[in-house]
Every structure is written in C-alpha cells, then in structure tokens.
Length: 299
Ligand code: RVK
Ligand code: MG
Ligand code: MG
Image (cartoon, rainbow, N blue to C red; front, side, top):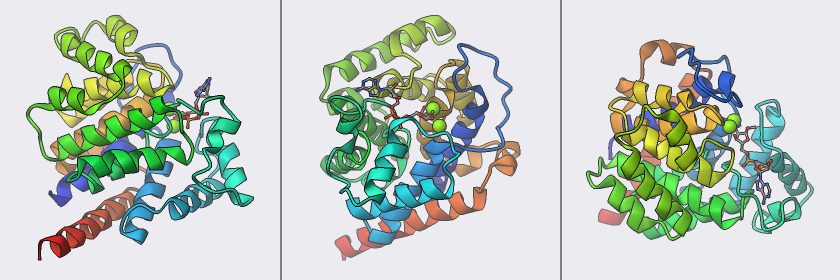
C-alpha cells in the first residue's frame, strides 16, 4: 500500500473525467487530448465517498448520503444523471439512504453507471478484504443505484482498483472469479479476446459497449487499462471510444492511477486540473486513515 497509488487513483479519476467531459455523447473519436475546464458528477461524487470514509473511518450510509446531497446542492451544475438529483431531493426531505429510492424512479432500480464511476475510494479503502469490498460497494451504490447490474458493476470497478493497487499479475482471472453475474463474466472473457484487437474500436464498442449503463462501461474501462501501457495512453484510449467518455475516462483513470501512481500523470494535465490540491489532499488523508486502521489491527 503506497500513498503515491492512492493519490494517483483519485487524481487519475478526476483527470479521466475532465479529459472525457468535453466529448461526452459524441459517437466516436476526435480526441483533443486535453482537459476540459471542469470535472463532472463522476469526480464530485467520488469526493463525497472519500470525504465520508475519512470522516467516519469507514462506511456510514447516512453520512455518505449527506455528503452526496450537500456536494450536489453546492454544485448542481456538474452534469449529474437524471436519477440522482431526484434522490438527493428525497433524502433532503428526510428519506433514508437505504430505502432503494431509485426504485421509485426506475422500475427495478437504476442500472446507470453512476455507482461505478464514483466507487474508486472504496476499492482503495477495502483493498485488503474482498468480502467487505463487495459488501460496501453494494451499500454505497444502493444510495442511488440498487439494480444488481449497477451494484455489481461498482463492485467490479472497486475490485479492479484494488488489484491495480497491489499490481496483481493475474488480473483478468481474478476479475472473472470475483464477479457473480453472467453478463460481467461474459464481458471479462471478451476483454481477454479483444486485447489483440484494440485498434478495431467498432468491435470493442460493439462487444463491450460505451454507454451510460454499468455493464456497457465498466468492462470497457477495465479493457482500456489492460490494453495499454501507461496512464496517458489508457485514458486517451478510453475517451477515444466515444459515448460516455467522461465516465469511461474516469473509471479508467482510477484503475490506471492506482497502478502507475501519481507521478505517471502528465504534468500538463495536472496543471490544468480543477481542485487538484483538494483531491490530492483527500487521497492523502484516505491513505493515512486506512494506514492507522491497519496498524491498529496488526499491533
Ligand atoms: C450525464 C431504463 C435506465 C434504468 C432502468 C438509464 C452523468 C436512464 C455521468 C438513465 C454518467 C440513465 C451518468 C442514467 C451517470 C438506468 N430502466 N433506463 N431501470 N436505469 N437507466 O439516471 O448517475 O452524465 O436513461 O441513475 O447512473 O457522467 O437516465 O444516473 O455518464 O440510465 O450521468 O442513470 O448517470 P441514472 P447515473
Ligand atoms: Mg459525468
Ligand atoms: Mg458520463
């Protein structure tokens, strides 16, 4: 566990988000390879998770939901999906975080990628306990996304972050064994086959997806990390696939940042990143909080 990987992960998420933000919704591939002036809801919600984990020294649903709500009302212009702002309003009016409020908006709950896009701090914080990592990923998702595809997509993204953090060699096999839903197992198999086909972007998008749903974006982010050799190449590749570029960029940036570390992020991007110091300090505090808990356990 290294601080450089924590700061790389959370900063990497914000960089991927900011790189993809100006291109969100475009069908394909004209990457300017420069950051937009703002990050979006992906980073804003990741910040809420990290703030809450630090304040509560672990998961606390009420506290986390309140962070989402207060961060949203401070900056409602961050480009949130359609569901979450309606849920934040319900929570503000006194509803509880664990009522699966998204089921009142989407039958069966939301399977948007809004739970996976923000989950990276959970992958860092619970990297040493796979059962807890899944349980807390699901609970964190449930605040706004209670559909099994969303919850498991978030758990898979968190697990990918944790594998990157420890530089796991057997990455694909571990992901395959981890996931409990067939649709993700199939996509992980497809990732393996596509590794030699990455320039065939049409095929990658056809098989893995580039959409706003969890199952059409989480595997794509994992593929973007696995099929490239540097932080920079991974996020540029992610964004080049078009579609939900800020979110696929953010999820790729989180995995790559945890793997390659903060120093691998191009300086010219860091200089441009909005609230860079705040995000860096948050990752440092998350690291210190986790380290303290680990030390207590050992001694
Ligand atoms: C704007 C039918 C469903 C569904 C269900 C579809 C930001 C809806 C971020 C919904 C991310 C959309 C993105 C997003 C994150 C979900 N039946 N359709 N059961 N469940 N959908 O509203 O936080 O960009 O079309 O929960 O997941 O950058 O509008 O929001 O790209 O998925 O939003 O789901 O969005 P939501 P979210
Ligand atoms: Mg966004
Ligand atoms: Mg998006």
